[in-house]
Image (cartoon, rainbow, N blue to C red):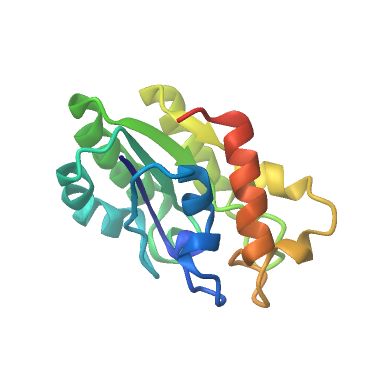
Length: 171
């Protein structure tokens, strides 16, 4: 069992993309999974639903977070909430993978501080880490990977994220 969580960047139907075209579905590749991600989720909101994930007894918990937190959660609060999430999962032998939102290339947002915290928490707690912000900044013609808002992935973007994830993380 795999559990994915986070904010609207990982939610299906953000730009008409159906569940079967999202990167969690592609990465799961036939494995049982649940996508708990919700629009407008901060790390604090994710923490309030961590018990939903725990009750599913997943082998992996994959968290893509930071985009919504940037404007609704100060960096210190973001860090505290990430710690709380990971500290609830670690004693239960649930493997954790932290994933940055992948929107650094968008001119309206600079979420480097939030990405730094994700990297830091990954190092402290020895989780897997995927820096989509860095990887997506290397993509040629990035506009082809995002919906019209330049933040949420379209079908091509979800496929690219799944490919980047599968090349780096073994579930």
